[in-house]
Length: 330
Image 1: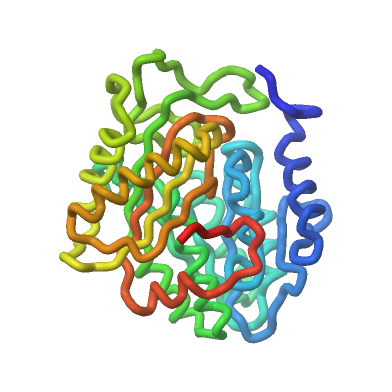
Image 2: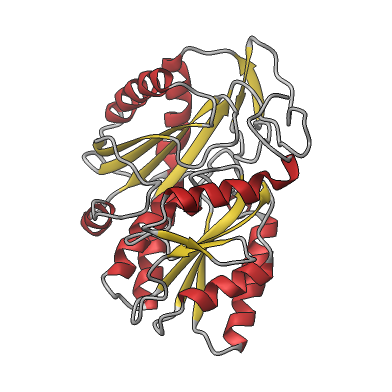
């Protein structure tokens, strides 16, 4: 294993320090906690917005803290849920009196730890609520669908709504609207290596592709022979679009991200092919997001997220943000 590290067991900690140091005008870290917050937190009269999860997905989620997105990100070790105590501290730190909304990935550890912290915060008198993101159509049981790329759209749109000093109920409503209208699926060409483990998370032959991967180094739901970009795009789009309940002429936002080890050239080739497939379904691509939003260490692959837009979601998505990890190709 070759990685630019010091101590593999301190990788998450040192990466968080580096993010905060690089964006010291926007971010600060709570000493002794794996929490990154807006430098201005708490913002009085604004709903506090929190997300978090395992490290190894940078810029998620510390990079999405800032005006117009999250008020705090709570991070665990690589691919490990954050500690409930850190989540409780984050809730207290961003509570500006209008309540706090937790954005939770649909993974057992995240759901357990965040909802535990939510109950603890309520006992302290803090008005707290949550949404659970489950946009991964690779999992057929909708109750077990993982939160993947759509989580970033939830953060951006709910963050813009919260910035308008909307009520907790209104911010949650908008977040739920994103969740209902957003679907994702990804593939992998190579596995990743968790620093503290030191070996690949799965094995795959040179002539194979993993279809329907997770973002924690999980293998796909099935293997297939290697495909051309246009074939991968057709496979992913044909799995995503039927789940969207979209009509001819609807506008969509499209997110194409590598999984950490995919070149920009490959991402743009794939975006061209996905664009062609999406428009063949009669949908209009309003905006595109191409880059690394929630990758998996150095995994090679591609992940596609499609969000059906209405006028409210479109306007909120296009609002400006200071979050350093948010970037747009449109």
